[in-house]
Length: 264
Image 1 (tube, rainbow, N blue to C red):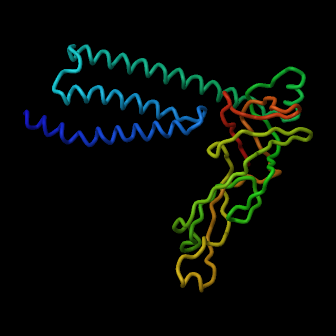
Image 2 (image 1 turned 30 degrees about the vertical axis):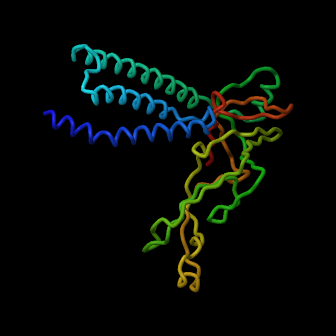
Image 3 (image 1 turned 135 degrees about the vertical axis):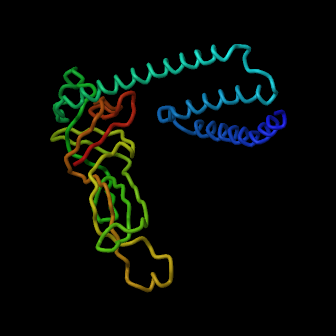
């Protein structure tokens, strides 16, 4: 039994080193990340790693962690799980209430929302309707001028079906704008919050890598892409606020988070 225990300790030493390396990597990563965009799962990982080290170090020394009976530990663990379940349930209830409120609310035209904000009646968090606009124009792999695109370029398979993945391309203009008939608002967005229907378009395959491909005709490919075309009808889920300059407005999510942009 003692030999098995010592062998287990030796085998778990590399895992402890890997855990410390991950902790250092996460620390440096969080140090370079803005406060508002720090993922919460990292903090949960820190807690799990700290708990693991607390349990691991006394076991390596061959001493008990706490002088209590297993029944007490099981009851304490059950209490912690109940608290976590209550927190998750409360969080889910809040998210559901917000979703029901947004589902039952009609989209508000941007011009009406700006007029209400100027009159001292902030429209608050809701769904705003307008047209997508951008200061710069990009071109998707399928040749569509757009404000953003997210495309997966595949080779043409048998009978025109989707073949192997050749490239994955994404691009976004720095500034997206929701445009009304008389007003505009800058949209604070994140790439994961841009929703648009997927369309399939023919395009040229990525640059050739072999001599035979360079000397031959350009291969055709298919682009499964989501694009945001300027002038297209657009919905933004967020909160309308005054921007830093007088007469300008912005749309952001709760707490300054990115807004949700829906096209199509």
